[in-house]
Image (cartoon, rainbow, N blue to C red; front, side):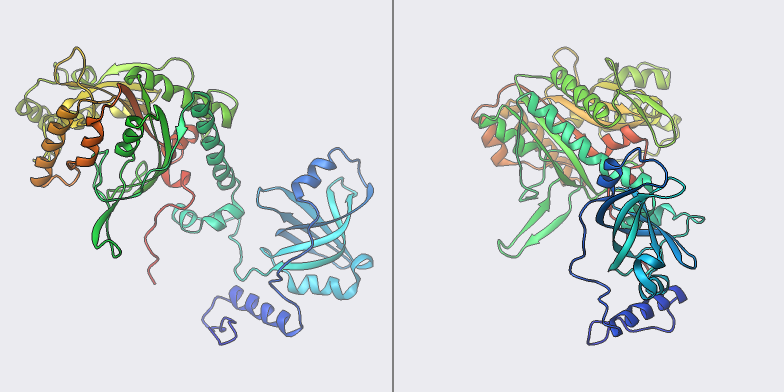
Length: 502
């Protein structure tokens, strides 16, 4: 960089970049600001489109407006130039610049100074062209922002990696990206409305925590200089939300970020948005009903129906009452023999070996059973399905099943072959909870990086009395996956990516 904050011209820059920088320098030399602090704008392109719907061919309205947009098409002829302006939501409008309206100097400047990707302000009359195209016939124009990089070529779409890394360009050129970005706020609004209609209170709980908990996951570790101690980015808000219930906020929810120092793939991201909610005097059944309502209302909000159309044209029906299956019944069917929560780990290892699975020696009995389920059944769960009854030893915060030994009142909701949500009848006995967390701490001491710790303050809160309740957690990004059929990196506006290598 030069001392006047002007990028130095590098002979090695691609020609397009060099030419555009030369144009910027020329504008400044001529006293024209390529990045003005403000430009004229009286209406959005969308407002103009809506106001002048149905105009006949070759009509002059007499209305003068100042409109802004990014130039995504430009055709320069002798005395009449055409351009297509596009604003952020994708609305487009034709701009026409004629010699008799703007004069020779302005017309020549338009031809020489303006490139595809530039942002401009155009002032003129709203008309329809001889072909019936709604247009603005300019009497003046101003550069709003000079683009120093050319937009991608329509004939050579960006790769998925480039789209993710340069989402700002993706939003400019690809309608699907703009649609996806606007889908999330619609879903968030629907979720909040569903909760509020059922008298849930939204709260915010800490993201930086002295002790991570509420899920089996490996945390991100940091250090506080102010407090001279280690801190963790939260893996789940569960333990703080339960503290809220103890304090009398009987219906509580939070939508916020969680961080898990784990793998990244088509359904996992180290940073992700999550809903968690707790309902006093409910259980795993009532919270399942709430979860179904949340998903179906979100579908209705974005698609106007419980049947959603995915990006590839496939339709998915999220309506009606959803199927329920037993985890252990699904395992039994998948492996061709009876498996229960009481099946010894040695027998499960034999089954897993026959399936060709790689067994982690640190897996406890319940974890191995869950891995077998994932191997034999998960991919078949396309329609929304509640998988009911998980092992107690992998569910340290969940109440044991009322009737089935070794099973917890926990379900996982599967859609399109991935886990969308999980729900419990929550464990509220502080004595049993302590025993469970001590067991987790023992596993952690043996090398399980995902094991929970003994949170004494949480246990103290429970000892004041926690009402019976149901609780659930659902990934917002995964909900968008279920609604769109996209991978998780396409549902997150700016997912984590590795730095570019020079």
